[in-house]
Every structure is written in structure tokens, then in C-alpha cells.
Image: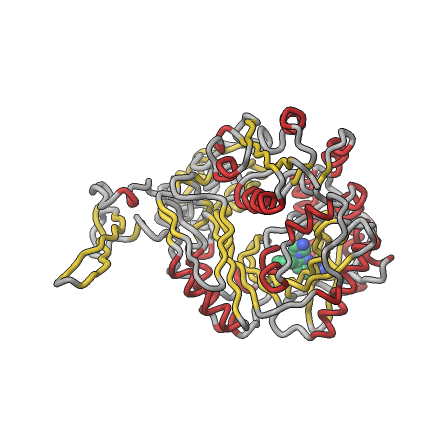
Length: 587
Ligand code: MV4
């Protein structure tokens, strides 16, 4: 077994790995950026080393700095978590060449699965079919037209080196091909450095079901059951659960065996996930994620298997501690991702900032995998996942009720969170009936009136004046009975207590009252301008897109916050902008 493991990551996943190491008796080495000097993962690790820098590129993706810390610390293994180096074959090779173990798959498996075309071919060779599509790079719009003629529309154009939905564009007919292809290629080039795209028939109402696998170096590869991750928005998962609602046992077994076949086909070792689209009783291979995933706890809760522990043991050359026939799934688990994002109106705008308070639920069947404690700050530079709320129940209705109970106990001060969206999801009839699919959150779920902030929530003045007001909650006792009282007071009024002193969040353009904006169109988050959609002198209407911002690994339309004439365009393609920067002026 390893004696000292370096965690090349931050936040909740770094904390999760540190905890597993402690249980295994392995020493832990944390690394940190300037902003994370006193972060939770740093506080928990046995040793911690500075990487310098603020952005991910300057810190957690600074190979030279990390390799230097590996040497200085004497770590004999590196766990990459998810994101960052987790699917970077070059990084894996560079540390392995120094005799340090990468807690992950062989670099060759990362490469085969990283190229989605070669991954499709590999799955096919293992007898596992993807969605009907092509395995050649698209060279012209004619290729797409020919495929559309042959297989019908809609057609999905996907980045060959992509994944997670980035760079995917859907074409509903011949007219849309040119725009979709150039946008897909541009996104692919921007995010993955490679513009190559391929295509598939686009399934219109699929569920996203993924199968957990793990394989050791002794020829054992097993499947551990599926997770349904259909409740997501803009390719960011919100809720994951296991088992998938109303999935037949025969389909589950066939999917598990298909996943193991794909893993064996690329000589996989480590924990991994094979993603499928499931529609009308059929499943199609989508891609394989060659890493531990955010949502691994739901599988742990129903199988009782500690995936991180097994992953580390397997990397150390030990055999899996169980066989396929020993894997069982009991009850139902649900995970809700608690991100520092405001789900108001379905916008999910990043809401970084200090966590002035944080109370996490517990009790029977509740697990909190967190990366922050009260007083910590969620930075705009990194993933804004605060923690994962995971529940287990004897069956799905019990798990849903338990999640609702747990959400009601969760209290996050200072930033807006996705918790309010989860309350809506859990309460929705569609979700309770298991009728949701991958587009359900965006197209069906009603998020009107949802506010992500549980304290100091700026709201419209209830009494009709124009004074900006914030909510202050105070506890009072009347005749010995305790009451929680909300007062909407002018923003400038002093806070009732220290938990309520958080700054008012920036209001993004196109915010709460579209059309009534200032005409100073700002971007809500840090990113790169990829396209300008308006020119000086042009008439625009409120809500119309003015620039395209690449941020959070997605293209986002930044919209006019009022109707009027464009008088100034302050950016050009390629410019880097920060949250709150003005990009276009409308008067
Ligand atoms: C698709 C699809 C429908 N048809 N491919 C998006 C993420 C990336 N891994 C693949 N994705 C999709 N591929 C075909 N041929 C629908 C999606 C999709 C999706 C998949 C999984 C989870 C959420 C999703 C949300 C929208 C679209």
C-alpha cells in the first residue's frame, strides 16, 4: 500500500479522498492555490504545499509546480479527483515515469476514451452499440446533409475530443447545418483545442443512465449498478440516483455487462463510468468517463462499497475485495448537488462569495460530502460545488421524503445555492413518478419564484415603494413561544446579526426584471468573449443576445437588459472578461 498520497485537487473531492486515505492509514499531501491557503482540504491533510496562482491554470493545472511538490513531499501516489488532471494521459505518464502511481486508469485507456470517435469504435468492437451515427470526422456541411437525408433529423453534431455535452449542437433540418457545424467546431476548438466533430441521430427524450464499473490489475472487472442522472441543466447534473426509476432487471444486467465489456475492451483498471442514453426500452453507449465521478456516493450508498478505498487499493496492485456475485444493491440513494448558483428563473447564475454560515443536515440515512465550512469562500475561479447532499432510503419515495427533510435542515448563508431548485425537483409530480428525462429541468420544471438565497435575499419591496430591500430573519419570543420573523428592510439598514452581513449579490444583466435594465450589459461570470452579435447603431430588444461568452466550459448568450440602440461595444472576440464587466452599452 502507499505511504503518502498527494491529492491533485481541491474542494469536496479532495476532502473525500483525504478521508479515505486516513481510514487506510495512508498519509495525505494537499496542494493549494493562493485563494485556498486555508481551505478545508488543506486543513484536513497531513501536509500541504503551496502551488501559487489563483486561477485553475495557474495552480491546480500547473504541472511543474505539482510535480515539484510530489518530489518535495515524497508522495508515492497521486489521486487526481475529477476534472483537472483526472483524464490527462500526459500527466499520468509524466508521474508514472518518476515511479509515482497515478490513481487512475492506464494512460492508453484515457486516450482511447478521450477521443469520442475512437471510443465509439472501441465500444463497437466490444459488441456495444452507440446511437446510430458516423465514425468519421465531418469535413463539410454536405456530410451532415447526407446523414440527415439517410437517417432523418434531428442530428447531433458532437466534438470528437469533447465530452459532457460541450460542443454538442443539434440540427433540426437542412437549414440549420451551417450554423450548428461552425458553432460546434468553434466550441470544440475553444474547449478542447481540437475542432473535429462527428454526428449521431439525436434522441429527443432520452434518460441519462450510467453504469459504475471497477477493474483491478488481476483481471477482475465488475459492474456496481447504474445511476440515473437525467435531472440536469445545460449538461451540469443536479440530481443523481440509484437505482434508475423503473429500469427492468434484464436491462440493468445487460447494461452492466455491456459496461464491463467496454471496460475490458480498453484494458481498463480503476473505477470508471460507462454512460448510456436510454429511450423506449433501448440503451445506447454514449461515452466512458475514465475517472471517479462526482456522483459516486449514490452507488456507495446502495452497494455499501467504498469506491475511493477500492480505487486506491486497486491502484496499489491489490485485488478487488469482492466479486460480481457479491455485489448487491439495497434500497434507494439520491444525491443533490449543492452549488453556489442562483437557480432563480432557471438561470443558475454563479453566486460565489463567503459562506457566512453553513448548517448541514444529518440524521438517519443522510450523508454530506462537503468541501467547505462556515467562514470559507467559494471562489469564482473554481467549480462552485459546495457539497453533495446524499440520502439513502428503503425505497424511492422514502429517499425523496428524506431528501426533502434534509433540504429543509440545510442552511447556507452568504451565497445563493441550488437547494431551492432541489426542493422544487423533489416536490414535482414528474420527478416523483420518474418521468423526467435529460431536458426536463430546462423545458418542464417550473422554477419561477425560486430564490437561491436563504438570507439577506434582495427582493422587490413588498409595500410597493422603490427602496431596494433585503430580507432579515430574526428570532423572537412572544409569551415564551419562539417565532422566526422575516422583515424586509431597506438595504442600507444594519444587519440583525453577523450571519446576515453578506454583500448583496451582483445582479446579472437580463436579471429579475427584463427590459427594465440600465443598458449597461454586464457578464455574470468570468470568461472569454467568443462572438459579438450586435454592432453600434443596431436596435435591440430586451432579452436579445448581444455577445456570446465562453464560461464554465459552455457558450452563454449574454442578453440585452433593455430595449434600445447599441451605442458602445466594449469587447471583441478573444477578450477575457470578469464578473460584472460591461460588454455592451444600450441607450
Ligand atoms: C446525445 C443526446 C441525444 N442524442 N446524443 C450530452 C452530453 C454528452 N455526454 C452527450 N449528450 C447527449 N448526447 C444523441 N445522439 C442527448 C444528449 C444530452 C444529454 C445527455 C446526457 C445527460 C444530459 C443531456 C442533456 C442534453 C442532451
